[in-house]
Image (cartoon, rainbow over all chains, first blue to last red; front, side, top):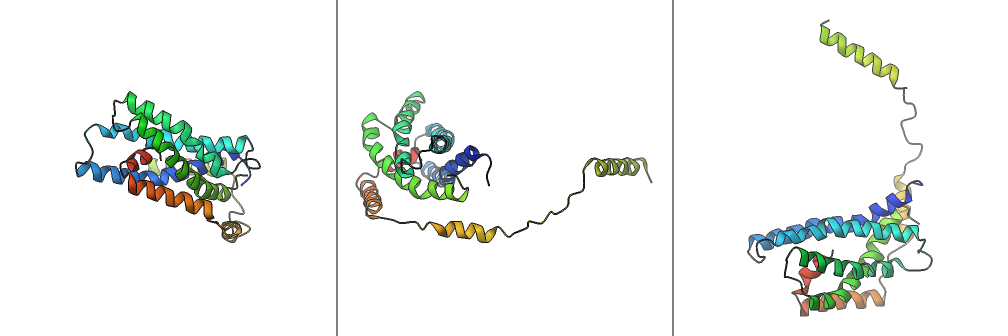
Length: 135
Length: 75
């Protein structure tokens, strides 16, 4: 596997959130059926379904294209992604008039999301990168 | 032979002449051992920092369960 390194990096980055998506969707459907989620909330799904996996892929392409492997740990680089994602999530939630998510919660969530991302990138994305021979 | 059969036969012949025959379809080597070697070459190490992070995440989720869907929103 030698050609198309950026495509391979993109696919390796997209893999983990794509696997997680059905679990999230199942949790959402169960919560929706049991009435724990108000109507109209499904609009929020667009963010984890379309935006997040693509950003993971693009973020991994940056990691490969900028040759950061020697300088920055992939876990640390992945942990920086919520710095973009959390404000984007707030903007999208506000645009869709979803009030489940306040600015105060976002400030609390940011370090937690960074910790989750650190582990996910250090073990998940790094593993996928090794498999597709992304250096 | 009906017109349809003749037409199919014609198409079959045209396709055979257009596409060169493929030789050596089998792989020279088995790729699976290489894949296994790559999976094993760098064992995953879970150090004290990662353990601390994972424990902190679990504790935060236990203390503030309302944050779980918000974190899921970003995954």
